[in-house]
Length: 83
Image 1 (cartoon, helix red, strand yellow):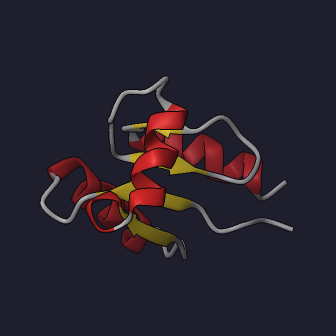
Image 2 (spheres, helix red, strand yellow):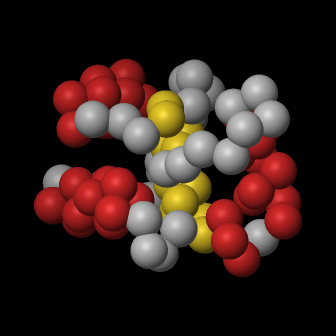
């Protein structure tokens, strides 16, 4: 069964907003975690990026986390998640 993607980002980040728009346009249910409001989320981002704070990050199922993914990368990850 497919799992909902998780978007780690910040409300002011244009790239985060673009990914949210992608999900809305494609009717994809997702979980959004604002990294500025959660120490655990900030730590998760650092863990995904070898100690660096980089976002947006998208986690789709058990796949490798995607850093600032393009629409094409999101398409591929979502397709893989739905197999």
